Length: 112
Image (tube, rainbow, N blue to C red):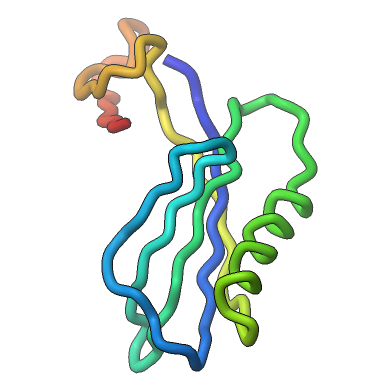
């Protein structure tokens, strides 16, 4: 397995939002979904994935997500930013089980 990093932003807008979750398959892969934060309706835009350890300009990754947000919603206001790392199997087949033979009692679940 290897680790893959990706990033996300949550935006607020006064415009009408779509419902559901959508994924763009072409590179760079981007996902879009709506969420609630109290009384606020948000759009979460995620993507800009890469293998952990690859040289990447973190600020540029977030800037690209913000460009997507402002293309969709001219009044987009970024409320939150975060990143994640996920375990990915070499064959890209979903896996649930022990992380490694030397790390007993540590289990992972991945999905692709």
